Image (tube, rainbow, N blue to C red; front, side, top):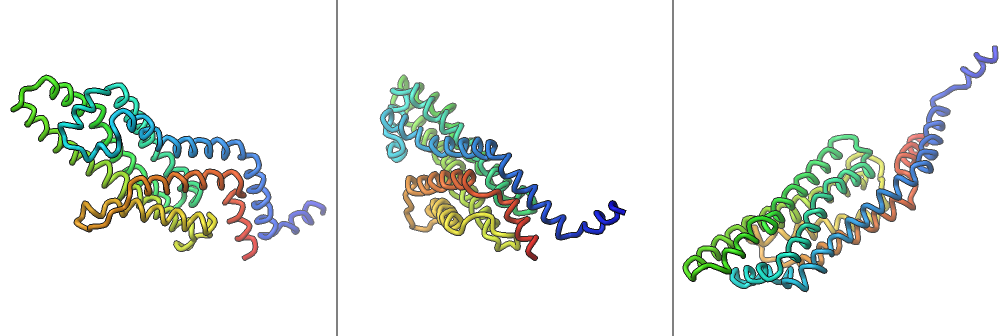
Length: 270
């Protein structure tokens, strides 16, 4: 008899209540995981400034990218160790964009649905494009710089042309596609998913969504000159905006309740 009474008390409402309790419990027990993920995100954000700290004093980067080919080749040949270290860290930062996109997708969608898959796919394309663009500085460019130092005037002209062509092509892949287009798009889609406009519950604070959307627009605006639109957006400004957003996102991940608990709580009230 007691068993039948216990079964009779079971209801959808109590099941949802149990779900909320379990989700809130998961939020507490997963604090260490969320703290570790947040620490990774903050380290990733700070890595964005490492190339500037290393390559800036060595070759005048990033302003040196606008210098004539001959001047850039001489600078590369004069500081091979700094070039290798600076761009190796930049390569690591670029590779880590993919797990960053996965983490953001997990936070805003629970890694469920088409938007989640789109965020991860665009993040992967961003990371791949960035890596391809950076690899030129770790492979071809040092070789050209070494050859340039020992070449005769006629050969130097050919090397300068080769350097300029590879630089333009690699920059188009890394900066235009990797940083600007795919980098801005995956963040924009993530903020769309977080806002609830796609039919989901809102999973981030409004201020963080607006901040992320503005950062995404700044990144995408970096590609405008490549399409003939005369609009100059400082690269440093766009990168800094993304770095600050990523740090804010990491902090919010630690201090805010688990999004799964909030969604389950909302479902219980409907």
